Image 1 (cartoon, each protein chain N blue to C red):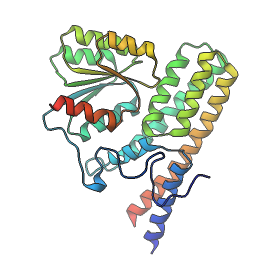
Image 2 (image 1 turned 30 degrees about the vertical axis):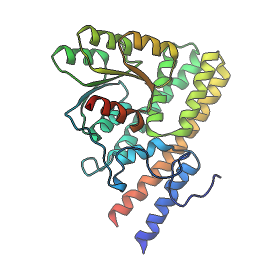
Image 3 (image 1 turned 90 degrees about the vertical axis):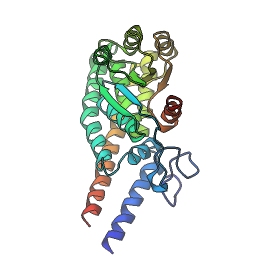
Image 4 (image 1 turned 135 degrees about the horizontal axis):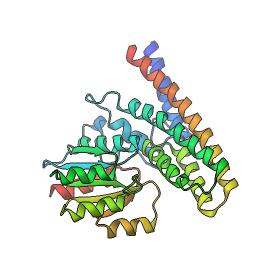
Length: 142
Length: 152
């Protein structure tokens, strides 16, 4: 049946997000917070994350280009790390940690490299989750 | 890439769920007493997740974006069993917020929370009156023991 195939597709997609370490355990915690009172909690959180995080990344990116010692750089890395870790964005969080380590050591090139990788992982996460949630919406319709 | 798994199992876990509200197993931890909490975090995502997590355990939770708002709320007479305060709040930071809350005589359990654990931040927060200091994310493993302690 079509819905069975869809469920299998969803399961495989979800599985791959963990096997590839794009997501980690914290994401499961968010799923468990979804219930009858908050049926769309997970998607709402992800929508919020992908609304806020690109702005923060853009500020970090610009700050690195213009002024490495920008006092707010640490603050924005901190904020991005907090939200990324809280949704279970494993690879994104790792690159933020790397960026911070480089920042602390005064390694501007290292920091820039980590931020570029962070942007890539962020895009991968967004695209993969968009596909995943799209399938979830389809199964609700079936 | 990676190992195939029969079902989604979090990396590093052997199976089964951590203590928490695992609805699939029909288990639900909830506080016995009427507990209240305040979350002070300027990040929308973190604020929403922390609030939802506490509420899922039956804790009546409010959330604010700034230290000033937290202090104002408590100054107005609101009391909370648990207050979770982000380290890098804008303007009045986490430790200063905790200090002002303690200065008002609040006996709440105060948990300082941060994205990047730093010992100096920990010392500052504890000196300001926080009871503990942890790195995000806030998880059931951290929250449930706190709730049990407050419940007793």
